[in-house]
Amino acid sequence: MSQLPKAIRNLPLFSGCDGPTCELLPEGRTNRNYRVDTGDQVYFVRLSAPGHTEHGIDRQKEYAAIKNLHAAGLEPRPIFFCPETQIIVTEFIDAPTWTLEEIKTPDALVSFGRAIADLHRLPSGNAVYDIVEVARRYLDELRDSDVVSPADLDLLSEAREQVADLCDRDDFGMCHNDLWYGNVIDDGGIKIVDLEMAGRGDIYFDIACFVHFHGLDAELLETFLSAYSSHAGFPLSRPKLAQMRRGVHLREALWALTQMKNGITGDFYTRCSTNHLEALRTFPLSS
Image (tube, helix red, strand yellow):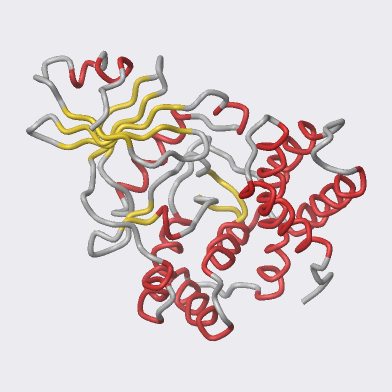
């Protein structure tokens, strides 16, 4: 067990509790997460890590997204948000996340296709996640940095322009933008968590993230896309989706390079940037 951080201990929600226990959970890119047990109820508490606003993260918008997804049965129950400290509290669901193997089955992919179609129909409020603007912000931060060569910076800039040509406001909806199995709880259904990047954006980028992170082969991909289209009530453009995977490589390469530029080092970031840059170099112009 961990010591209860002062910022959590000072929340009105816990002021009358007698010695709640606290467990530090695996951290995200821009947050510190805790399981807090008061004896009467168990909570999930998210604190912001330093520099989270540099990634365009707004916890108030994240909390609004949590409320919207909970209303649709896709998110744990929201409990409290503190604007001053940017702390988010939801119910803690004592269930595992989905595994890659569990998701890569036809029955699961039908369920995920339907759930993601439901997600894309939800209101997004004033939260926006524009992959083109996100890439511009990362590129601006990387200019004059020694972690990326001028040639690779040109490659990334060109990829951003190609993704911009793909984006269509008619295809915008409420998106998660980081749909991998570690962000989905298996409580007998599908609960999508970690909404710090959630916002209105091109649904094809969101779908491309899901497809990329789970390595779907042609047969499983078709099962997933057919379930999505059937539930959403409109066909998906396979050529646009294939090309939008460029956006996933772009975002992931830029994120890893920005981490390295900010002094966060390690083999993971080197491999991530190298692999996604290579994917961009060899990406087909049409599909």
